[in-house]
Amino acid sequence: MIGPANNDLTYLIAWESMAERERLWGQFMADPEWQAARKAHVETYGEVVQNIASSFLAPTAFSAVR
Image 1 (tube, rainbow, N blue to C red):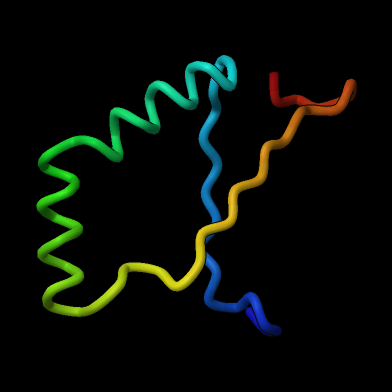
Image 2 (image 1 turned 90 degrees about the horizontal axis):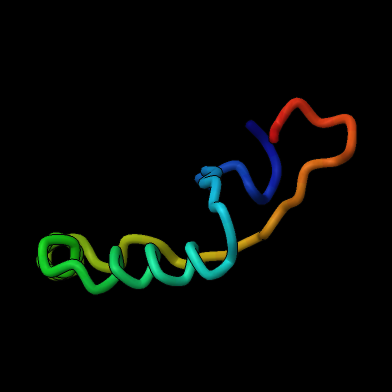
């Protein structure tokens, strides 16, 4: 709610492996419908985001996320 990251959008996606992530993210980015929607947005409003940062997390031994 405050500070320099108060306009950040954070979302988590679970991948079975880095190979799956590369394959599926590549398919998403190459999707003609996504490309057309992004292009239309950029032409009307400008870039969708200023910066994208990716982090890869692993659950701890005591995590409920598995």
